[in-house]
Image (cartoon, rainbow, N blue to C red; front, side, top):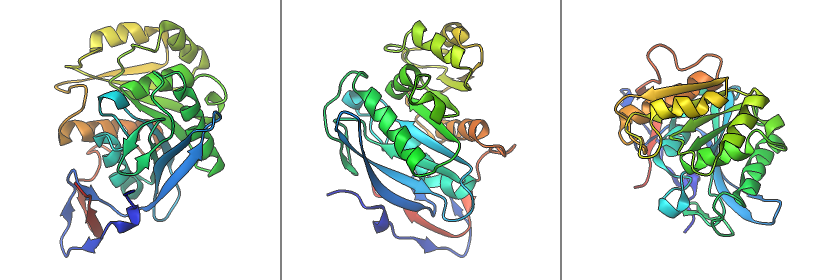
Length: 266
């Protein structure tokens, strides 16, 4: 059964509610679909602020689907649960070709990052057609490869402001792609866990020196999957600081919410 975001049940407490991993704040959520240039139907979810202007749009590219990555990978779920209400950010999550989640399964099969070029292009095109402003790619692990390989090339480059990378392995993305990002001049933030399995902060700084405008941030104590609320919150705060004018503020995202909340299904 396809998960329907309208099935979330919101209730209001008399006191502020601590924001935990499964806490869902109010937003306008809808299941979405879009078709790639090579004819694959991709499924996803768009979460928008309930009211007020959209401050930025995150187009999220998930970790490797052959190793459990999908649109519900936990940092992206938390972004969609929190950011529309707390920051006015719109969050577009989707399954790349052949990937399944409670939302459903996108058509096609995994293509090692090659055919996925069309997936990136389709997601960006969808955001443009919906009039979503201030568009940024956010890639995590395999998703960083897609952002690096295709984000600085047309038709994507002219439709995004820049990108934020979480745990880039730099397996598929090469120095050629890094040089393309450098030439494009678009902002690029690279968040690198201290204990990453593939690329650690010192080596990341050396590799990303090919992108003069890149901001490489080593995150002490973190691992590739950003497990733990402390690290997920740090990632979200870094993203907000990059993509919005107001940023996350000196204390970071609020840790409590006054108003209606729901609890996400397990």
